[in-house]
Image 1 (cartoon, rainbow, N blue to C red):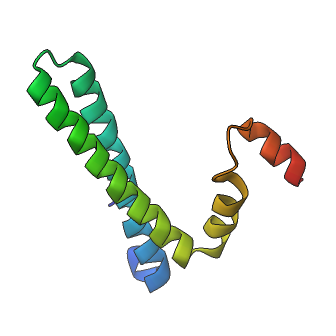
Image 2 (image 1 turned 120 degrees about the horizontal axis):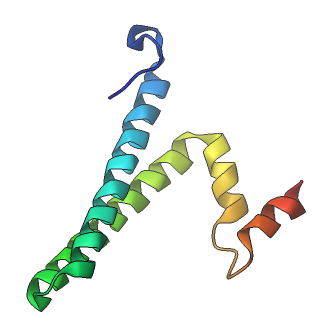
Amino acid sequence: MMFYENKDNLSKNTLDLKRALDSLEEELGAIDVYNQRADVCTDENLKKILIHNANEEKEHSAMLIEWLRQNDDDFAKELKKYLFKGKKDISEIEKNSI
């Protein structure tokens, strides 16, 4: 865990948010690794396992995002604004909310 400020000066809430954000970053990185490996894999059984593993990491990512939503009001506001809006141009959502 990399800190930009003295860890001893950070609140419990900030430290928990950091744990969640660091964990989310790790889960997303794992998804990328599994996707790349599956993409070039020549053995179909191994490919299925790698895709399964990537999907497990997506589940973990979703759990962390939900925790962030429950524990960071500003994050929750942004998720509400952008998620589950259908197949819209995402940049248009921002323009319409200004």
